[in-house]
Image 1: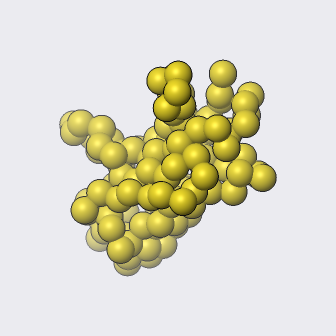
Image 2: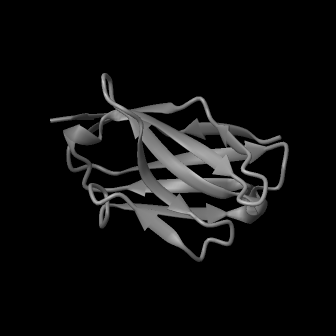
Length: 118
């Protein structure tokens, strides 16, 4: 069982930067791949970025590639999403998900709101 808590979401101006954190407890995070998703009001949840359990592989949505960076600190049981050059269309609730490839278990956090003003 993994409990995930996202933090760092705030109101920021367009062009600004923000770092989201996803802190895990209850299990060793290094056993899980982690993904960040976002869901804007009235839209489907979409994958933003993901990172392998070792941190050696990352993947980004086209809409954020070059602006967002996902990284992890397994010693701190935390995964980060560094966001730069933020745009109003990045406004969403951001969720992190931990998933274990061998068991197909997955766990979600409660989300953190990011609002980018124009």
